[in-house]
Length: 225
Image (cartoon, rainbow, N blue to C red; front, top):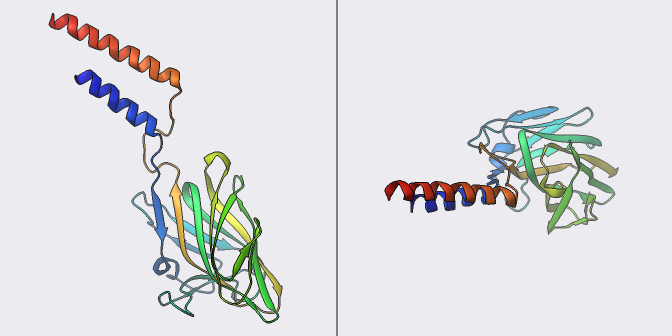
């Protein structure tokens, strides 16, 4: 019986593969720290001590908006508030397999308009999923506002579940002087949060394991006899 339990436990352990842990970064974290900077780092986001650095090169700028979510409120990390096109990059201290942004306050007011596009990871192109919360459209590469205060959720993965450490995008001023966009919430999935193995064995491996355990069980029965 002991060997049967061990065999079952081993199969469950390996067959499960990597167990992913997902972490939410709320507006209370994203709105913390200094405003009017080109780099911000958020420490200790999960039990593994993962950190996130948001950065841009001039003329990009990162600011914060306080308060709580609600109608007409945009708490979180604010970028593009100086109405200047720039690239923004978000880098995790450990590889991730998924990253998601809740963008809010995305602008199209009168003659002022802005877009977000060219989302890419440090290891290549990403696959995007889109949820229109309010007044936004997504053509597969670029986020547009159809009216003022657009809200959208964009999530990104790599083909085949490959990991990446950073994701960047272009903030583009299309016309006028838009007020910028806010990231109200982020979410990410670590590649392997402290697990000893991330590899699922080939079927032949299971055969060898079963053969070895069966041999041990037979030897044990002979000794008892």
